Length: 235
Image 1 (cartoon, rainbow, N blue to C red):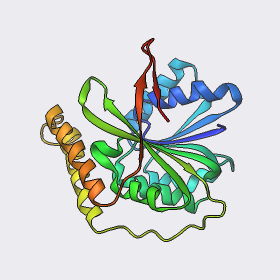
Image 2: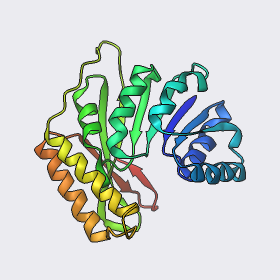
Image 3: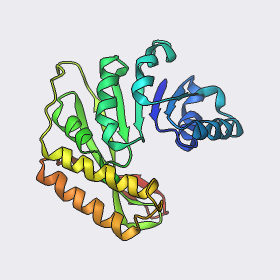
Image 4: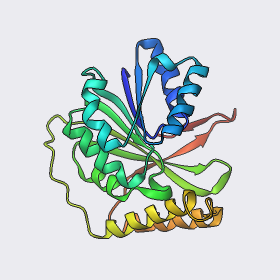
């Protein structure tokens, strides 16, 4: 890929991994991060990793950043989108990217945490739109085998598929409220981290059932382990 656009840089780990893979081919990463403290840390990490020349970090909200991306990216469209911000914003930001024509014709749209804590409108958007071929990778949280999460992998395929006005079921608003509430409790409540492993395990399975009840049933693939211990996605 020539261009990766990331939402949610945090301290720069995934931006570093992306940059190390694509900079040798002239690729670059543009990452959007709202927290200026995280931006400072990420820039230091990128310098330390030796890939700062291949990564641009935009400090601000995604809805403010996206209109500037065509200029910031020098007219190049994204080959990969990686969303790692608040899940209930994924679909809004994706629609903005579509509006600003920032997706290449074979763009790969990826997103983390779509089951924990969740991204119901985003999954509905990808599943319902003929412009995307959707799959989710089911995997266990690091050091927490009981907690399931999904990573979205969706191929953008606009040709021959006109963009349709998206209508969401009313039940998704309640699911979005629940996902935002548990996210708030986990990282910004009166006692940060108050959502324990048991709570997360219950939440992810309850959300999985709620997705199915709402008609969200994406193609699901798993992470497998080879005899030598290495892992791979069983597409």
